[in-house]
Image (cartoon, rainbow, N blue to C red):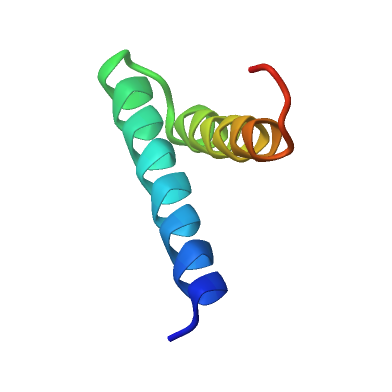
Length: 60
């Protein structure tokens, strides 16, 4: 396995973990399934955006 493939796999796992945690928090707060799924997707997008910003040398 190459370096880039390993990094992509780690990034995908981190996105999945962030989404799962956000989903669990939303369900615990009483959100319906579509709202919880939307919260999970938003958390994954936020995680990817933060990672891109930090890797590009931005100040996040």
